[in-house]
Image (cartoon, rainbow over all chains, first blue to last red; front, top):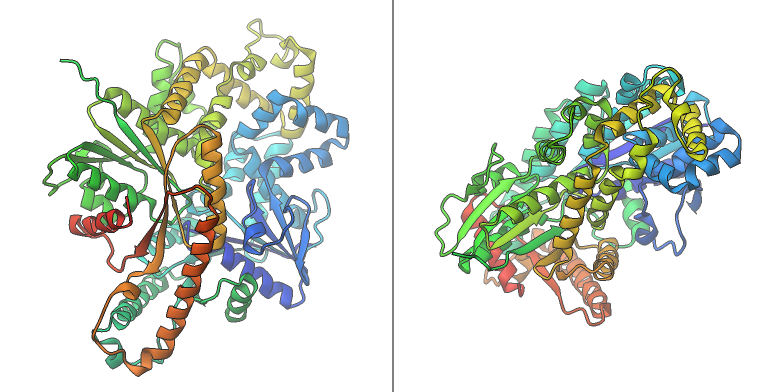
Length: 283
Length: 352
């Protein structure tokens, strides 16, 4: 039964997926049955973890207590349709007719709603059983993520009656329940990602009443290095001095958002399990 | 006077955060220095880059301040919503009640939520600049995507929306009385809609019906436009430039994207591996490194050596692919035209 739903978002390229996998690994190591979810049509983790098998809608185990799934809007909708209609022939009619398929693909907000419906089906006690205690969702980047969160609200406004309207309101209630839903905004100690984090945390707070936390990714620990060493003309020292100044500046800016701030260190490794394992330890 | 010179089109694609926008602008700078009249269409430039290009807070094509030639460097930000609305209004020129669609709730949602709608307006902007003429080179920076190939899929996805068949489903029953579902000709279609109605509620079906009835009658023009855009993208004048980051998953993606591009009949210009090594690593120095920094320095050097080897192995695997270009991670950020010029120099040193 789903106890917690975590969304991991942030600007493209900040390392969202690696942080999401690390958070999932951390929960799994604590002995909680965890599902790491990626959204869309193609799996990032398949290549990242060199899994050597396809990743799809049905969860596959990738570590102890840790399963992985790829949710597309269409698959989520199909499952929902099956649950509601009960009759496979009707589901087939809907999903295998070429025109209705493209209708589903383009029907605004329907795929988004189906994905969120799937994520919140446990707490809403609606739909097929959700056996994982923790869901870690490697969600879309900033703009698309806000659109995802907006989908139930938009739908509830556009469609006041019928199952769609009701579902939308129920989904929205789960998403805005801080005991269940957590949002993690991943950032980097750089101008553009920090600017986007500031705007995103502001939007999440004011538009959705959510209180996200921020994970400042790829920081370098320079606490043990003196200013004297950094203020030398060697290119590496010059670079590290720049890194230190920028990290301090960006950390200060992110603290001003009022959101809890954590840091994930830059790990110099391309081994996916070493990388996520080390970040999991720190988070 | 007849101008028969062709317009060269460069499309920069890649997943978010890889430095696409800056590289697109730098490529523009190089082309303008070579004497061309260039327009760079950007999507979401950083404030510093926008102010460098002189386009902060404006969506009009603007001459980049301080650029001295010999060519001309122009830049513009693509205003997604406006481009999309203008496109729809243009396509619906003679259709009655076309402006109704701009107020339709589903249309508003569609243009914000539908994956690919941003890509679509970027392409629309590119095509209208192409048609208007006036530039030797058009450079398009594309919206951030999770995967580079989503950009290629966008036009077809949007075109499917305007496909004639769908609108016919929702054709207005005219005579009123019974609900419009009953008036639909084909029983198969009716069944499908009924299932959809059970699933979503009749309000939703009605909204959808409204939407498709509103756009009915001018999908033809929308389709024409999508076809024309596609024709431009596969033409000999258009080259795709894939900008990719520096990790294994990204390279694998780049490789399959390059394959997709060729299979779909597009022309791949180059694959640019951005930030392939840190600039400090390449800088020669007489200055001693403080022992305090030695262990950290060692770890970085070792890490970068391993990554360079991995990248060598990887690019060697791209049989027959001579087009991989590597750029260092520059320490400076782009604050002004000089900063952009440095990126452009790195680009041209890398073999642009």
